[in-house]
Length: 603
Figure 1 (cartoon, one colour):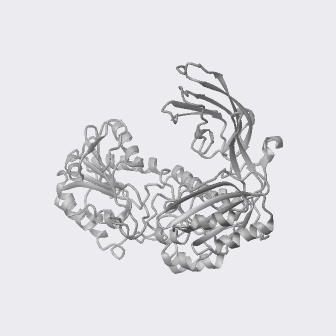
Figure 2 (cartoon, rainbow, N blue to C red):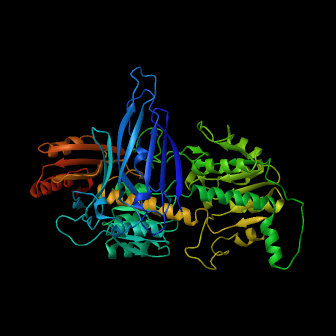
Figure 3 (cartoon, one colour):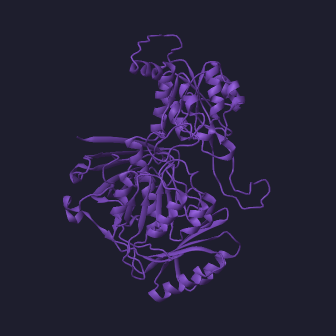
């Protein structure tokens, strides 16, 4: 069946750019080459010609399980008014289909071979500390030529240098979605899967024995400083979820290991869960369902309400996690910047759904944020607590958010209000919540996360895990779910694709865009022979670039990009016209500098 998707995105100048794609995304099958087309209209106003970044197709613009594909796009001006008053327009001609790196597998035999152009090979050379960075992979790139031509190209396989036939090894824990597995295997990586979480010593043993370069976890496995220090092969960590508090981000950054997560992909799923909880609480549906299962018919209306006209409060999340240099005045030594806000990815999605149900929305934020719809910002958390009928929490687990909602905050809420926590287990003081429910201060609560959670499915949620479990279960009108906020097929597929792609980009090309603890640096893919890429993670100290550039000064540095985040800095540099001996010389010289953390070279 034909599917049409439309996306309207803001142009850099504030104008709109419209993207329409028409495709036949049969799951698991190649799309019909004749059935894919792209039409672009760009209102450029009086601004210079600019190719919007959204023309690089990703899974967000296509069916979530269709192969990620692109076509050669030629853009040519139709009309330009020299007065500068009329908008400029561009026509687009579309070439043959190509598969982008990180796409779900597509059998090339299903598409005629002339459609697949390849770029020169990109190969891994060296890694410091010693690690395998080779294996089969694809490289993709974008180039904008003087004729306003856009293209995405598919590279050939990576091979390590010196020659090493061992592929990149990836360990995935806690039932990471197969979308990530498919991406890694398409790159030629060796993937091992474990469906449950591992303890610290188990994880160290498994990673050391397997020599893994990448590990993927969800919310239960803890990657501690000890794990990081005792697994020298580890190159990158993927959190296939929103939260990253299960990883020691400071220790990872100091070891030159970026950590990637998925901050957006499950927002819709969590927001839908919250809406379902709001309705179920307001109608006491869980109590009625339990009674019916026990054979009790209890048709009542007392304490049951419509949600239309009620007020939803969205609070709170931590705005940013940044890593600061020590000894800077007024900056915590741990490097975490605390800014409590409440209208983030999930909160804004939730507000749209709530307003569609006839609710009003308030949110608390320490900085002004333009709301979606008619949501209104309040000045203080206390103002929010006293004004809302339903309070929904969305906040990571940090020392500052432990017991964020306790007796004092609960006492400020309306009598008969409802509390919903789909954020982190330690955000709510559960014994205080039990007291508020038992006294009738609150009319109900929905809890999806808990201070201590079982490592595996089964009959493990009892008083031995959380001492108050029996008391909470006995409270009326309480919804308890086993941390399922983002547990939908759609969310998990997108999380797997998003985080998996980020790990591949870092391993194959050195791109750290999207890392939560690491400088975000990227360069276009290497498309020519005889060019190598230096990936140099180093201490953020004065004089480092001077030393590095003195080493590179005898060579042709085509591109260079450096950035820092706290104590860690990251440099990418593309060097052309170097032979094997020169590559080895550059690697040894830079990896032996006093500020070196990790040095890799890719070609």
